[in-house]
Image (cartoon, rainbow, N blue to C red):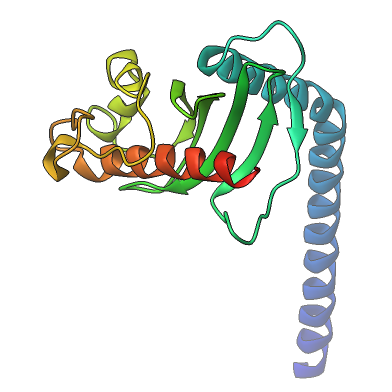
Length: 184
């Protein structure tokens, strides 16, 4: 009698394993299909979001042309794009208080900031997330290399209770200018 129970239990385990495998395979297939159907739309939305950020920091009617740079020397710089004779747009991903921040800075041909835009962030709502507000991003316009937040003796107003996020943005802006200058 014990052998019959063991055989039945072994068959039950195999049956449950096959059912679990089938459910997993069907779920994976559906997720793969949804990914395949939406990946182009998601990529297009990302492209539009980035283009809007670029236009916000350095308005330019022509196309932005990505330029080559020393990625080892500038590890936080994701891309540098030329905007004709107007200047460059530098996209960076760097650490904030709560996680990564991706921002774009417009740099004019005289190496001053023409605009700043936060593309993505993981900062705390109501505190560090204020780096996305226009009052804060506009404080970068006209700034040149060596900028710092007011708490560090600079001219960029620090967001109350979000010094780390503010300081990260100022440091990223300095990096953007230095990376463009390094292009030659």
